[in-house]
Image 1: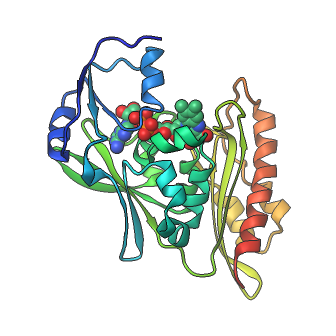
Image 2: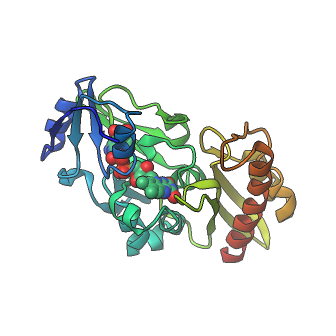
Length: 282
Ligand SMILES: Cc1cc2nc3c(=O)[nH]c(=O)nc-3n(C[C@H](O)[C@H](O)[C@H](O)COP(=O)(O)OP(=O)(O)OC[C@H]3O[C@@H](n4cnc5c(N)ncnc54)[C@H](O)[C@@H]3O)c2cc1C
C-alpha cells in the first residue's frame, strides 16, 4: 500500500500545469479519490504528479448561451448543492448526490471522474443522457468533444497525451423536462452495479423526447437509443425498460453476473423512466 517514489508539483496556473503535463511520465491529480488508491496498489506508477487543485481557472460553475459549464475541479458536493445546477440541470445534481459518500463527494471532482472513465461511475450515465460535451486543453491548444466520443472504454478516454479536462458542458434543461437517475449500488463503495439516467419531455400526454444513459452494465456508459425510440413511439415503461440492455455487452465481476446485471438494468431503467415521466410536464 505504498506508492513508488514520485515528484510532486502544485502549479498555481493552467499554463504552468500544462507545461509540466507535457512530460509523458507526468499525471494530473485532482481529488485523488481514484488516483491515490491506484498508486498505493501500484496499478498506477506515475513518475511525476501535477496537482491541479490550486488552479482557480479550473474551478467553478457558470451559465451562458443555454449551457452550464462546470470547471474540472468542481467537486461532486458542489454539483449536488449548487442552486444553479439544481435549477438548470437537475439530472446532474441528482446524479452527483448519488456518488459514494460525503467524504468522496467533498474531494472527488467532475473532471477527475470523467477522465478516469470508470465503467461503474455515475456521471457518465447522466452525461450521456444530457449529450454533454467535454472541453479538453493541452499546451498545444483547446478542443471540445461530445461525451460519447470522449468515453472510449474502461479507464480509457480520447484525451491525447498532455491533454486534460478543462470543463464539462451540459445544456440548460428545457422547461417541462422530467429527469431522474436510478442506480443499484455496490454497498461498500456506492459505485453503480447499474445506473440509468433519463430525460423525457411530453406533448399531449405522449413522450416527444427521450434520452437514456446507462452506466455499470458495460465497459463504458452508453445511450440506450432503442429504448429512447420505443418511448417516443408510444411504448410503455416496461417495454422500453426491457430494451435498455439490448445490444450491450454486459460485464460480469464479483458483484454481479451478466444475467443479473441485465435484469437489474431493466428494473432500474423502469424506475428511472417512471420517475422522469412523473416529473415531466404535459
Ligand atoms: C470509497 C470511494 C467510493 C466511490 N464511490 C463512487 C461512486 O459511487 N460513484 C462514482 O461515480 N464514483 C465513486 N468514486 C470515485 C470518485 O467519484 C472520484 O472522485 C473520481 O473517480 C475521480 O475524481 P478525482 O477528482 O478524485 O480524480 P483523481 O483521483 O485525482 O484522478 C483520477 C484520474 O483522472 C485523472 N485526472 C484527474 N483530473 C483530471 C483532469 N482535470 N483532466 C484529465 N485527467 C484528470 C488522473 O490523472 C487520474 O488518472 C468513489 C471513490 C472512492 C474512494
